[in-house]
Image (cartoon, rainbow, N blue to C red):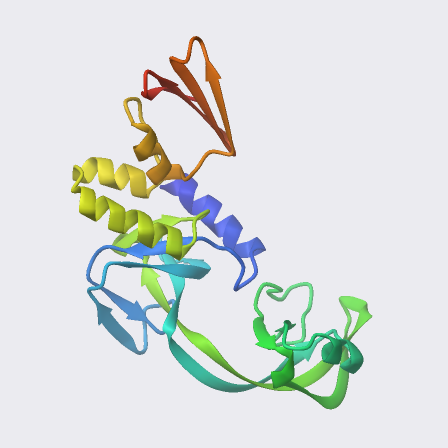
Length: 243
């Protein structure tokens, strides 16, 4: 778990707020917190469901908190921030989204903290700023209005995190496992992306998704599936080696 925690901290430092940060499947009754410190407003959830992860925070010790997006619950916000686009560039974007930074970016600030706002919801204030750390960029102050999904924090003990899978994939996988009524240990391995000797092709697909390559060898008895960072060898239809 410590190695995983270090990896997740790295992801949190380099990934944009609404980039693909993976998903978190809530499996236990847990409180969803307004703040990552687990203080302030909280709500109880008993629903077993996966959500997109937008941020990761290391709490006390090596425990983690995941900020998840609740697509069915949205907040109307009126905010201010900074963009680098000119007015003509903004107009050319049409209805596409633009990154709006809530604070003037500096080298010591968190450049991953921004909102994706539809360009037609952004208006210039007429003020500009220069950041000493980015002297070649002119930051334009803007106002914006947008409806964005609510985000809450959930502790890692409440479920399973998959850094490379989105919520739709994880929900589909979980629903399939519930219907199959598999052994709980096997179910947990699949949800966490593990593959063991003896896994069937279906179980590997549930765990990792479809392979990027497939090679048939040795009189059709041996099959090789290629994944990023993985190589799965099947013998007579079941996993014989994991490389």
